[in-house]
Length: 102
Ligand code: TYC
Image (cartoon, rainbow, N blue to C red; front, side, top):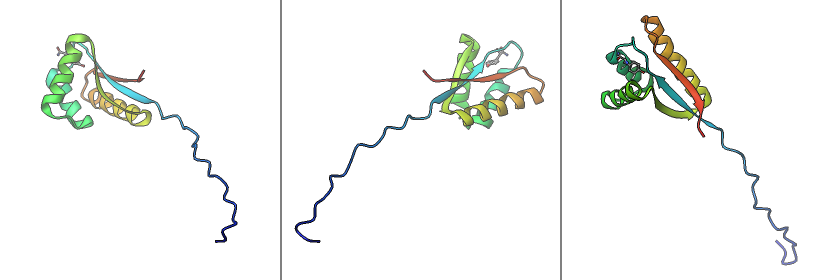
């Protein structure tokens, strides 16, 4: 390369892309689904340990709702539906909902 080459300054400012919004999967309490069944669903669908599942179940039981996981929108919606359908198939009204994280 010749010494006389004129180098164009590189533009290093990258356009900032917004991060995709994260969604919470929320476990909703009810009066009919057995505690053990709730823990089983949390373990099966959300790959939680017995201890983590029990804690999340107990929080929903006491407070009305509990956050299960925070993840991408499509994953949150798929998991919430899978878990709700699993309970419905067993005859329980257990519900999982999703909402955007603040
Ligand atoms: N409240 C239920 C019971 O007493 C147990 C339960 C806990 C159900 C959490 C739903 O999200 C729930 N059998």
